[in-house]
Length: 107
Image (cartoon, rainbow, N blue to C red; front, side, top):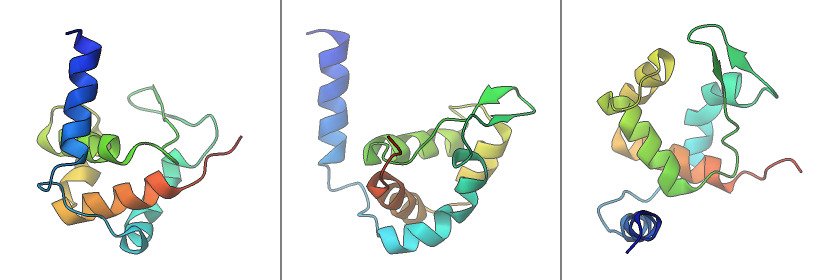
């Protein structure tokens, strides 16, 4: 089994797991308001650390949950994202992920 196959299997298993909180996109919309300050600006790069800020609209829901949890645990290193993620509960993260993943991306 390749690493890619293993990773995809793990993501699918986690996405279907009952241990993940079900997100409420309406609640997530209110929580994600501050996200647009960075993630909603085309070609935005923050000053420190110098980092291209990715668009998150339409991103995979399980990926958003995983990324925010990693920032909250310090497994991903970015001061602003770490502080933001630590301020959210598991349900908040699920709600944000539900909202952001449902957004349409610009073509």
